[in-house]
Image (cartoon, rainbow, N blue to C red; front, side, top):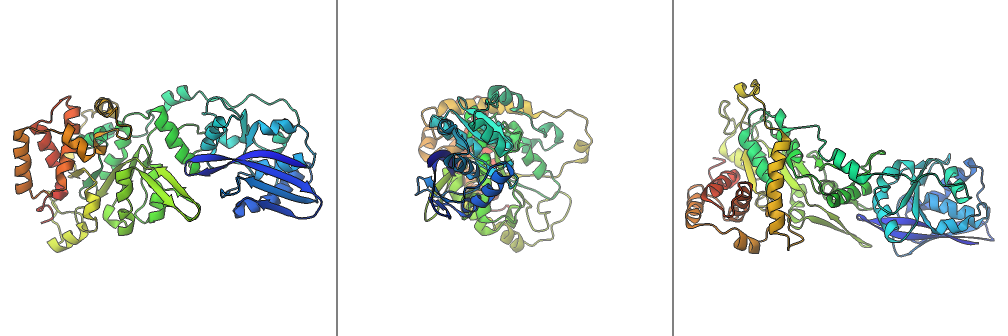
Length: 513
């Protein structure tokens, strides 16, 4: 008897509905066809044990399971549940077959029949709603995640027997309900850190505020213990709150990567990813035999922090260049190509030299100029070209450390950042792929970043006296436009240009001498 159930295949952050056809006829062998990977092929052994533990039997006949469309590779263990239900229906051990056409199913079966969570429940639920399914049956651990999709009934189960009872006619329980608006608003700014914890470093706070306001990448250069990591960790707290669209897109990426907790439904705060410097290029940008999102995609709509930047392998840093410009990552394999979004703010931190005390106000540097230059040259010019702000971090004075003067809270800074972002959103409203000043093209620079004659004179003087490179020119204009937006100025003033020039330390020829 031919029976059809429905599952889903995830590629990138999008899902495709898979029809699972089960036919039982005379014979003795089991077959799974339709480009299954090893995890799918092994499912029949798990299913046999799970059926036995649930009081049912595995038919001792020829079982053919077809996963259609057959030209899409099927990966993972989420097909266990729909295949098991299809086998029971095809062998007439369960009767309510019409219900099978109304629900999409997914879940991994344990040998005792319990249902284990799977990756990618959110994009699967989104696709199920698009395809007109009445609901979705899945592991209880994934129910909160899938329930954020409106118009789709979500039923979470802990054991195969629960699904069998529902298909056999037991009344369905109340579907899992998540008030996404309420949860979104409740947790939208629930950060564990705050800029109020940082004493001193006012010029660094100002630089990070500029980075947040314009979406600019930044590098912090300073001696050990000066607060670079502490400051970088607090950058997400001053970024504008996630929109609902950004939250759903970010949650889909983390769902596909299996990074959401059992009680999680929506990601309501911007992600902060800080991979160790021993990371491989595949782990950073994504990929593998079965492509998965990398750290740059997990940082989408948030912050990617690379501490001890010169310690990263050169090949790892160089693969950042393309996604920093395009803001997405394309992974190509012989059988498929997937795209992961990767729009993030890059914040890097590094010591100014191997010993860490170059330009230190008190401690002497033990490195000669050649060693310093070799250390800095580990970071290529093309990568630095994509970093707008070069910020020197100096040690905090003792008087500031012990000061009881209240520091400005992240919420206050975030309000100013949000106001600047709203100006940019209006400016680029007719350009759907540009959201902030850091994403401006050269054409936009010519139109939007007009400067006065005094500003041109200042830029010329800066490039000549400070040894600024030609590549710094566009970056200075972008940053000065952001500073003008923060000040509510329609035009870029000379003071805005001067501050932007001060934030290009590594472009100065004399910096490492």
